[in-house]
Length: 56
Image (cartoon, rainbow, N blue to C red; front, side):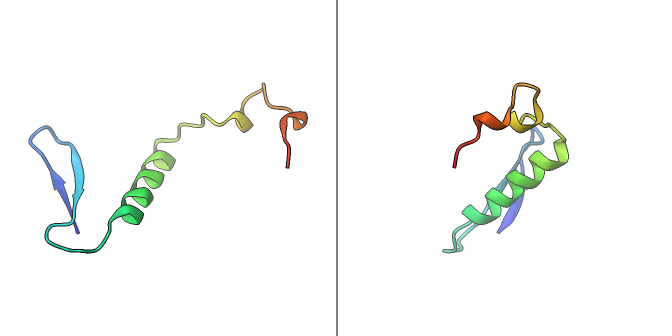
């Protein structure tokens, strides 16, 4: 598995001729990218959230 950067600077994962799946690696990469960006868009962080909205 390798990271490929195109001429526009976009990065993508490329597995080449490997037969392994890269789903887990891509999901991890996306999760870390979102965490590093620091965008807290969760309903739990907003003032609109209340405990009455939770159900189990």
